[in-house]
Length: 185
Image (tube, rainbow, N blue to C red; front, side):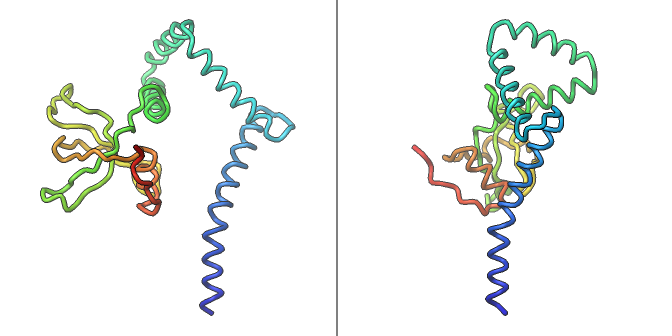
């Protein structure tokens, strides 16, 4: 009875990640295709990717700065819209934009003797502007979740890590299950 259970559990480990990945990709493709009402599977996704690339290209020109500034001025006049737009823009910029914020993985000492620690990413190197000199802002992602907690930490309790941010984030999100490759030099 032990061997069939072992095979079943091994089958789960091999099947569930693949099935979940295929399902998410399928839902994404069909949803985008549905928005555009195109009969060719995947065409809507390709058109959407090309449109985003075109907008990115236009956004790299000098002309776009004026359009973006005017659009942001308009959106900043609407309280809820301003919050949604600026938060989304800041979050995307933090991960993939020119103003990346999650590029400084750190280890934080949560106890005086450093026996309790957690991983995070420095998002603000100085909090002088809000009256917290000597402190930094550290975002700590939660394991098996796409959320996190922002901590204000004395700089003295933060240790910079010699690791790629993406590797540390994968390690945290996986609950410490994913292996972190050796530091790249």
